[in-house]
Figure 1 (cartoon, helix red, strand yellow):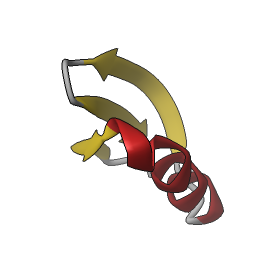
Figure 2: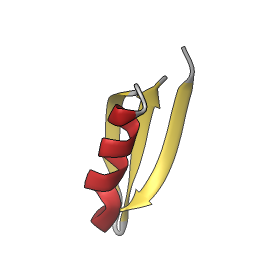
Figure 3: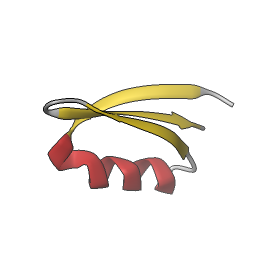
Figure 4: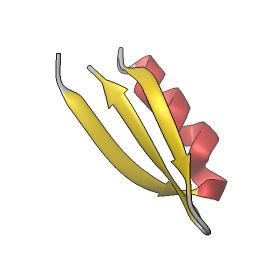
Length: 43
């Protein structure tokens, strides 16, 4: 398993989550910031 952390604009959150899941990844955490979101996931 590999851990990944990415930051995306809040407006792109649903698209990013869909891409992670369709690629076989599992989201384990999200952290909200002022204008963006950090997503931690496993592949």
